[in-house]
Length: 238
Image (cartoon, rainbow, N blue to C red; front, side, top):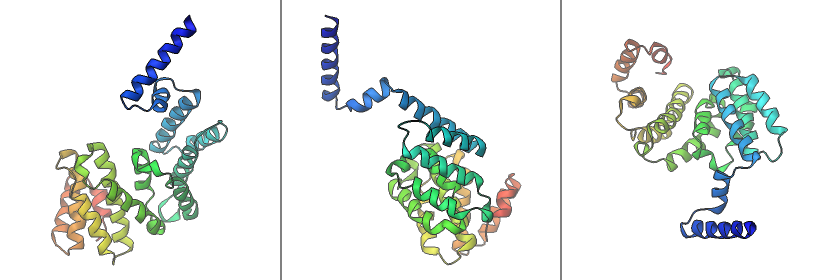
């Protein structure tokens, strides 16, 4: 009888899920997670924390754990490789081949644009030597998130940081790339007018003035300097 009741329960549950248009697979993954799913979630969180803590040793330990765990996704392995490459990178001294390969492996996963940590990784991986490889990825974000203000403030900040970091490298090393610059500037102009995004909006305005040869750019540098952002102000390309 118990088995019969269980059978009725399962049949009714599946029918309810189907009527409501809910994925049966996703339902059971969420409410009845396997050990593999739990391991994935835990390692994913620890990997993200290692990235934010600049802890390359921890990232390498997690990569080894990923390789030794059955049924672990290739996406997580590739993300670990990219994090390690990014943490090992030191501006122009970076091992560009390692970063380039890690970026190629990770960003081939179609779902990366839905992962906010992947967006942060992209932002921190932008370099002079890989700008050509990064450009299509940035354009993918622009197409997917056309109107930034429709996103949460946290997501707007992360997306806009990609744009600002890209403009920084573009202006510093590739002076004759106005077409791409204005496309990104147009995208950044869709940021919400919220105090939490004030710095990003000021930086957007700075690059706009730089690309339009407007003297007001110097005024923004001065304001940033006086507002406690001296390091940012000093490093901005002219």
